[in-house]
Image 1 (cartoon, helix red, strand yellow):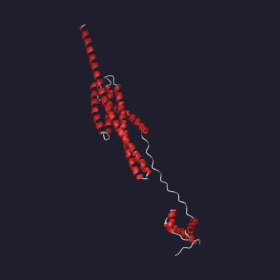
Image 2: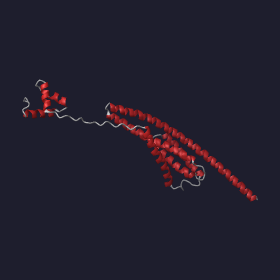
Image 3: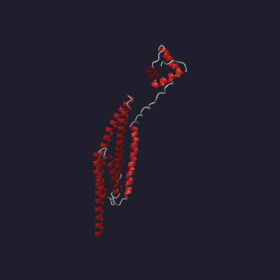
Image 4: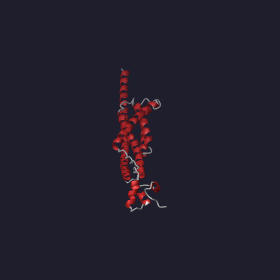
Length: 258
């Protein structure tokens, strides 16, 4: 009976210990989720500022094209392309963090925590590297969060980071990242207009100057012919005009003075 009583008490003790650990895990994951939300807010604010800059540069591209300054329009367009590259990186990170927060909510049992948390830490590490040069303050915060997530995973799970197959951890992280990138691309198409294409410069088709044109010009000028004026009037080079006059002279239509 004593053994039975001890066994019963030991079981209750284990139950309470497990319950406390589970509550502690929940508190830790909630704290991490809130920290991730803070980083999401920072990223979204950065996106807002970049979108405003994108809009301003877009207007400048339109204005430069309307004024025929294609070189300046090209410079603005290149700046927009660079900004949109940053927006895509940040948007991807924002969506990935949202997926991570949802994933953290699925961690219910202590035993399975590490299986979820190690891929989460891997993903956050990848995101940290991607945003490092765009939003360094967020990258620093993510670095700290990665350490916390790894620590929780080791403390709460029977599985450690070394016993998990690296390829499996990486595959799970990359799958989330791939989904976030796809969603980011679709979202950018919704919120950002396509860059205007530069107008295609077309060389006007020049009408062939005829003998009749020359004769009409001579008549309108009282029998005189100004080579430079005629060339300017019909968009010809001086040499072209002289060749036409020599041809007409050889046909006896006009008489050129030596």
